[in-house]
Length: 83
Picture: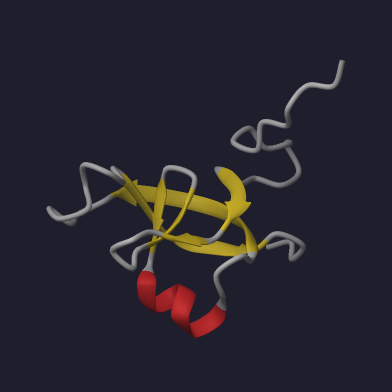
Protein backbone atom coordinates (compact mmCIF):
# COMPACT_ATOMS: atom_id res chain seq x y z
CA UNK A 1 0.00 0.00 0.00
CA UNK A 2 1.41 3.42 -0.93
CA UNK A 3 2.00 5.92 1.84
CA UNK A 4 1.13 9.61 1.59
CA UNK A 5 4.12 11.81 0.85
CA UNK A 6 5.10 13.95 3.83
CA UNK A 7 6.18 17.20 2.21
CA UNK A 8 7.30 18.76 5.49
CA UNK A 9 10.39 16.55 5.72
CA UNK A 10 12.80 17.44 2.97
CA UNK A 11 15.67 15.39 1.61
CA UNK A 12 19.21 16.43 2.52
CA UNK A 13 19.96 18.01 -0.86
CA UNK A 14 16.89 20.33 -0.94
CA UNK A 15 17.47 22.10 2.39
CA UNK A 16 13.86 23.24 2.70
CA UNK A 17 11.55 23.53 5.68
CA UNK A 18 8.35 22.79 3.74
CA UNK A 19 7.19 22.13 0.18
CA UNK A 20 3.61 22.86 -0.77
CA UNK A 21 1.13 24.87 -2.82
CA UNK A 22 0.43 28.60 -2.36
CA UNK A 23 -3.15 29.03 -1.17
CA UNK A 24 -5.21 32.07 -0.16
CA UNK A 25 -7.52 32.10 2.86
CA UNK A 26 -10.82 33.94 3.29
CA UNK A 27 -8.96 36.96 4.74
CA UNK A 28 -6.68 37.32 1.71
CA UNK A 29 -3.61 35.83 3.43
CA UNK A 30 -1.30 33.67 1.32
CA UNK A 31 -0.15 30.47 3.03
CA UNK A 32 1.27 27.03 2.43
CA UNK A 33 0.54 24.36 4.99
CA UNK A 34 0.82 25.96 8.42
CA UNK A 35 3.07 28.80 7.18
CA UNK A 36 1.96 32.35 6.41
CA UNK A 37 3.70 33.67 3.30
CA UNK A 38 4.83 37.27 2.88
CA UNK A 39 2.02 38.94 0.91
CA UNK A 40 4.19 41.37 -1.05
CA UNK A 41 6.68 38.65 -1.99
CA UNK A 42 3.88 36.42 -3.32
CA UNK A 43 2.28 39.30 -5.27
CA UNK A 44 5.63 40.28 -6.83
CA UNK A 45 6.89 36.87 -7.93
CA UNK A 46 4.29 34.11 -7.51
CA UNK A 47 0.67 33.21 -7.99
CA UNK A 48 -1.88 31.16 -6.12
CA UNK A 49 -1.40 27.47 -6.97
CA UNK A 50 2.39 27.67 -7.44
CA UNK A 51 4.35 24.84 -5.81
CA UNK A 52 7.04 26.31 -3.57
CA UNK A 53 9.76 25.29 -1.16
CA UNK A 54 10.11 27.33 2.02
CA UNK A 55 13.77 27.76 2.92
CA UNK A 56 13.37 29.39 6.35
CA UNK A 57 10.67 30.62 8.73
CA UNK A 58 10.35 33.17 11.52
CA UNK A 59 7.82 33.76 14.28
CA UNK A 60 4.82 35.57 12.79
CA UNK A 61 4.93 39.11 14.26
CA UNK A 62 1.28 39.90 13.40
CA UNK A 63 -1.20 39.90 16.28
CA UNK A 64 -4.03 39.47 13.76
CA UNK A 65 -2.86 36.25 12.09
CA UNK A 66 -0.46 34.76 14.67
CA UNK A 67 -3.01 32.39 16.19
CA UNK A 68 -3.81 30.79 12.81
CA UNK A 69 -0.27 31.05 11.39
CA UNK A 70 2.36 31.07 14.16
CA UNK A 71 5.21 30.85 11.60
CA UNK A 72 5.84 33.14 8.62
CA UNK A 73 8.20 32.97 5.66
CA UNK A 74 9.59 35.44 3.19
CA UNK A 75 12.33 33.05 2.11
CA UNK A 76 10.70 30.71 -0.43
CA UNK A 77 11.11 29.85 -4.10
CA UNK A 78 9.42 27.83 -6.84
CA UNK A 79 9.78 24.12 -6.15
CA UNK A 80 11.66 23.25 -9.35
CA UNK A 81 14.26 26.00 -8.88
CA UNK A 82 17.21 25.01 -6.67
CA UNK A 83 18.67 27.78 -4.53
